[in-house]
Length: 151
Image (cartoon, helix red, strand yellow):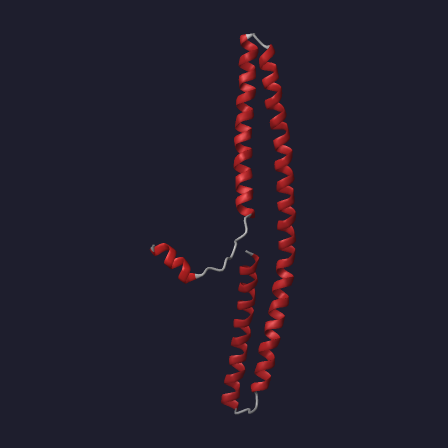
């Protein structure tokens, strides 16, 4: 994600500088100024360096924020799982000692609420893990892959 944003910022900055340089080129052709190519190359290289610095400076705080958010999400998931497990264990122990219909009904409501809470926990866990997944780039032998598919 951050790589795409960084590339977009660099591309935007380079295009802007290229428009600026093309304006200089127009002035060069209209005014007839000579030997301006070294200046254009220096401006282009400088623009790439500045664009990289701007992209890095703008993305770094966002990256730190997401890392902190990821850590907080993992901690919250752990803190949610512990009470759910405790409630399940205690309701199982209480069920063994209860014979009163009214108390069993209350216990069923507690178990139902705990089941719903556990389902929400599972959904949240899935969403967080899905968002944290990173893309894996693998080298593929194209000829071997095609040959294995054609067999």
